[in-house]
View 1 (cartoon, rainbow, N blue to C red):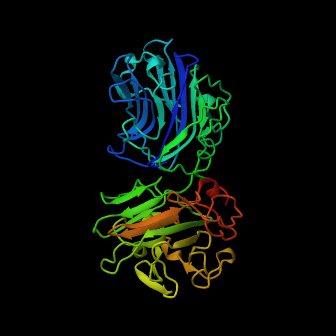
View 2 (tube, rainbow, N blue to C red; view 1 turned 90 degrees about the vertical axis):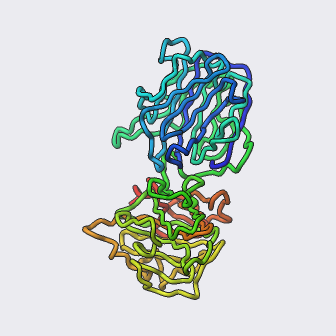
View 3 (cartoon, rainbow, N blue to C red; view 1 turned 45 degrees about the vertical axis):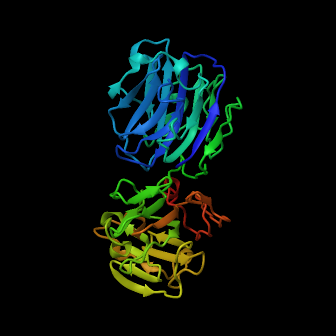
Length: 447
């Protein structure tokens, strides 16, 4: 939802004393500068309303005080996972006393420790979301700042009832993880709504017809969801001021002359066969003969400030295949440049990597489905550690990769015609080799 915001103006509330917000959020940014607004109902900086957002790696809730001022709560806990989904629940009930008027949960656990707690100022939904005439904004602050960069799913607002997280999720008895209840049995009330259910639909699924509109940006559908987490670029590793990730951490870009910058995936595999597509949005400048590289690497051998072929296996735009800093093959008749798509098939079971350009012939007489040809990566394994993932690197002056890990998009552009995929996990531009799948939690569990 990067750069995108939704809007809706509600009507008369069912009950301005009670409400619930439930939303699944996969954030993309870290650090204090990455404030990201999920929901907002304020009209100006001096009017009362709501702000539900991430900031300083913490959970924030901003609310009206019954005057022209606002107050807020900030969790002491830091939430720094940029790969997993967080389930956020806010419940308001002004018939309760003290801090019980507002309660917050993350992944089913109640937040009880706050670095700032002004809940005593909370007076009710007259000054909160759902029960004012202010527009409700999703993905942006009221003044056009703090855009949400990441993914949102199953967003519920309940008008008139304060629910606990058990209405929207439960703990898996086997794994102990908090999992989604995709069809909760709740009463929404007049202003209640349910949007972003299993995709990018802004049509209200609560039965109220409280439909939102896309007021700015492009709202794209994603296969990445609370029940199947997909690999993205790993923002937890060093980036640098000019080396950026965006669009839910699927776009890598370098804007300054600082040398090669490498980034790896958030998920790795010790077994199985996986597929991803990398579109070169901009080859960048040819500084010192260096270009963007794409391929895979052992997570235990990740180095951010070098080209990928130095410590992993990677294809160079000129057709060379680099492995551990050496050219092991030269395919100069098969090259890529701005606008081209490089497919990478990572076979962890047989310790091979395969490359092709624009859906053409696999390099080195490769046939990933039949385990023939391709490039050996057994040298990546040290002390039986074969935790492998996709990776890419860029060098200077707007070099940019737009990556499709299975969501069916390159940045905000959908694949032109989805290829076949027997695993039914992920959507790709070209046919996925038989036996391969997207690198996701379901994909990992399929082997």
